[in-house]
Image 1 (spheres, one colour):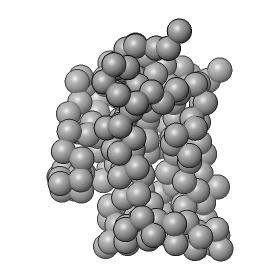
Image 2 (cartoon, rainbow, N blue to C red; image 1 turned 90 degrees about the vertical axis):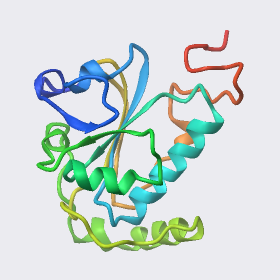
Image 3 (cartoon, rainbow, N blue to C red; image 1 turned 30 degrees about the vertical axis):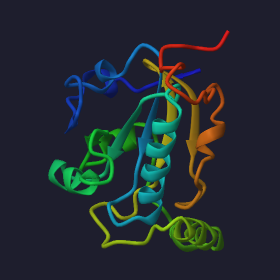
Image 4 (cartoon, helix red, strand yellow; image 1 turned 90 degrees about the horizontal axis):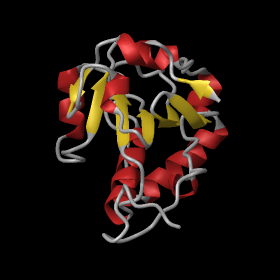
Amino acid sequence: MEFLPESFKTREAVGIHLRSKTILSCLPHRLSLLVFLRHSGCIFSREAIHDLKEISEICLSFPPVLFFFPGKLKDAEEFFAGVWEDASVVADAKTEFYSDLGLETANLVQLAGPEVLIGTARATLKGHFYGIPGSNPLQMPGVFLVVRDRIVWEHRYRHIGDHPDWKNIPGVTLLPGAEFGPDVMPA
């Protein structure tokens, strides 16, 4: 089992709706999903936010999501305004947290290969479109399921459109309805 890098305990984070000044102290003592997005113009970032918001509203047992945005705080606020008002977001303009987890810049195939075109069709059919590229347009995304400082599952994107199946994350049981809140686990 891997652990989050030391920087998640020590480096000060700025963002939206953060409960503390460091990442680790923002996380609850149960499963959390760390979602590292691409820039604000990325169709796949828009798709991920929409899908995660929808699942979080339907299934209260879904783990809380902490987004990482590769831009300035002002850009993150503008990007999430009207999309997911109460989302918790770390603005990481220098992509330091991305680098600490080994999320690199994309190559040409990861940006525009045939699989990306299939992903673009999927996202477009859901009603999402490309926007104006924001800062760090070559940054690769990533998803990490953590319990405090332990990484229990990760999704390393093969290409920018490599959308994980949010409803089938190992270790996450989706229980619809208010009777199954985030702290109630099935027997």
